[in-house]
Image 1 (cartoon, rainbow over the protein chains, first blue to last red):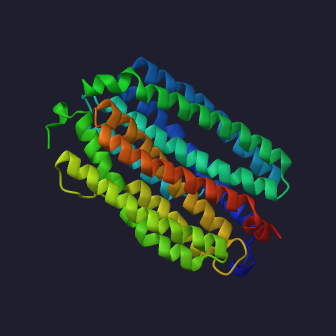
Image 2: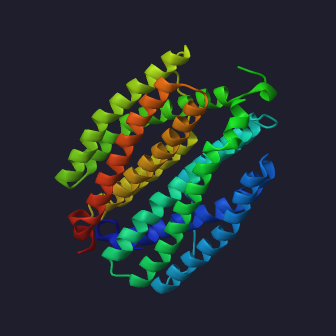
Length: 166
Length: 166
């Protein structure tokens, strides 16, 4: 590890890569719980699909660690832990209610937006650092996250929340 | 508070309003620290501008509490606390380096995306609940957050990060 004053964008890139690697692993553990809790079949299917995508995203991160010649290692990410804790709280507090799915959707969208923010940042930095292969890998994941967020937004505006409002 | 099984989308809306109200107040406390830490004048100016906007966003939330006939009260938001803690860690670890501004930008964009996610959810729910005035207020803030995120993205791709990569 470079001494504090010598730290560069390369170090920041690696630190942030470790942060999102930890985050993705936590998300992978949480998605099956969210799928199990969902009342709507469509929402359950969306969570299950994203579980598979998350596995691919973790593999892409491992490829980037390899490009850097560094071991793939996570670093505790307080942000994702906080976001997931809030989701768990909603699952507990709204268990058995018609509003549960709306709450699960909101929690999942907070997760997606955290990822969109982190991958957007990593893509910019990889570009500035001239890491073309990393840019491609990060962009694949970023597009997947944006598509997932769009799917969740459509579900949130459709029958799932109408049931909760009824 | 409604018994667990009777909880509805109205309760979820109010809970989430309390969550983002707490979050905005934490952000308002944090922005001056980020502005002070920034090396770039443009980044400092962006943080200072957003501080003023955040005050307006808090007022809008207070108007929505009033529309609901409820006292404006926050509820600890683990997500924003985690996101802000990560930002503080970056400020400590990269203090005095050329990469600091890139780290500050990344932290600020994680905050923006959390807000975009929460206000997007609240806007959808306000629509489903027939709260037209709330939809308008939330949408004003949502557009402001998206504009801020765009400004930060442009700064992240411009000279600020180039300095860090040099």
